[in-house]
Image (cartoon, rainbow, N blue to C red; front, top):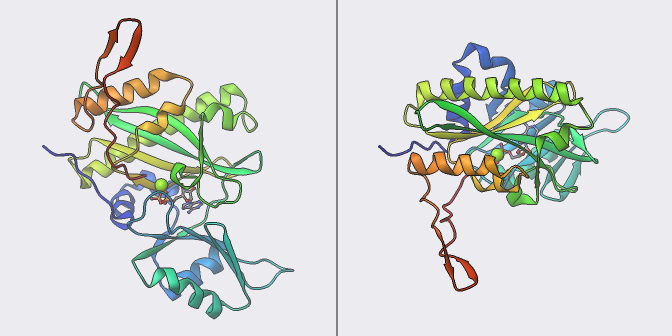
Length: 276
Ligand SMILES: Nc1ncnc2c1ncn2[C@@H]1O[C@H](COP(=O)(O)OP(=O)(O)O)[C@@H](O)[C@H]1O
Ligand SMILES: [Mg+2]
């Protein structure tokens, strides 16, 4: 049976909202409209406006209602920053993006920082060789200094969770937090599976705020396994790859043949399009 993929962030958020235990981890998310943008800016002061079917951080916009003594609004898209005196001006300018495709507006989370750059976390959950769910990898993603997204394809840098958290938590607290992320990952995959029974793997984008509360930014049903090659612990990627081969997402890696004294890999692993 084929692996189930779901692109709509709205549909996936609604599937998660069915689980009572997850409510505290889901930032308020609405369909984008003049009204929802206005209300959410009033309530949260900072929101993310993003395409419902987006990937790689493309089209993602951070919008702020400025606090006194500043007045007005501003947004950032890529490295472009624009300021406005009135909500009307802001809304009209955002129309350039939001009128082309379906957009969502989500409560903005103030991410933890590492060396003055924001970071978030990718948690990989897969069906293992016993067909049970297992959290197989956790990796941090540090944003490009001038950008508002952390995606690798938008200039973000993958980095180990331990390294990113080292200035925020002692090693023992980190271990406890990692255990918490594991439990959350399993809770998420099980509630998603109730709506989408044929999923085999998910990659969860988790924001950690300045009070260390974890927030689910989105769940990818076709996550990039290759980002985990960046971890110093190579066993993590090997396991992720092994499981992905077992459920038919990736082809087995080709054996390495030795010709005279030269070692040549027959071919590189086949990269398929990922959505992350
Ligand atoms: N609500 C939010 N608060 C803070 N940062 C966010 C929020 N939503 C998205 N981001 C940032 O933008 C990135 C891309 O957003 P995401 O929803 O994961 O879409 P994509 O499918 O393009 O990866 C996230 O990894 C995160 O760095
Ligand atoms: Mg993402």
